[in-house]
Length: 316
Image (cartoon, rainbow, N blue to C red; front, side):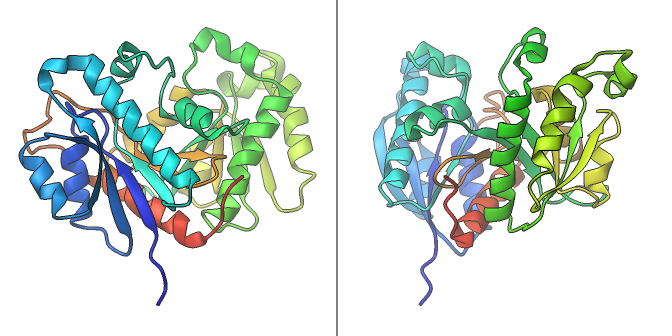
């Protein structure tokens, strides 16, 4: 009998929609063994979750504890999930949304999941990726972010030939090992309007991207398509001509993905020793408990993590 993947699901901030979208998503996804990691005392949703999956408790939730307790419990769930995955007890993890402000109030200074996971696993580098395997205007849209949670004014100085090369290579390993694309086609969104227009509107495309792309193209197992203006480059993916769009900063990529695929977007951390995915939305505390939260992105995150686990490849 083939062993099904064992996937840990952290429930995120207990004040948000994480527990309820997890419950809804689990009703529609099979072929894996779910392990829920989060606090007890979540009320009616906890009783529903108990019927759907194994539970690994990391404490008790008390609403009077506010943001600090929510952040502490969120962090402990992530720490527990990583420990189980590193020990081989989980094949991958899916993380429900957390509040970065709550995380900070609990004494954790990480900008978000990505940086926290990198620290916990001890890997030297990761690449934040975003994926929508279905879009309403055509093919899948997959992104790799060269910079993530960084002020926009700091991005140009952060972009170096080494950074572009290294971050892209990590994403390419994930595309080959997790997505099963042996020779990925990769295209790049320029930093400046019109991709610099030959240096008229900025020189990063010439000074940074050009030598980085030249180095990447030395790998016979990748097709480097070039660097293009950020207002048109995404069509290469949605029209099926590119497997990955590498973007220079956070919003230039996510604005497109969230507009096209708001309810099925998935955050993927490439470079970890196990698959990690997350729905590409926040805690949505304003609608938590109202029954209106769309579980589509959580379902997509679980499905993609299970797919990655079934690929049987550890990205190191």
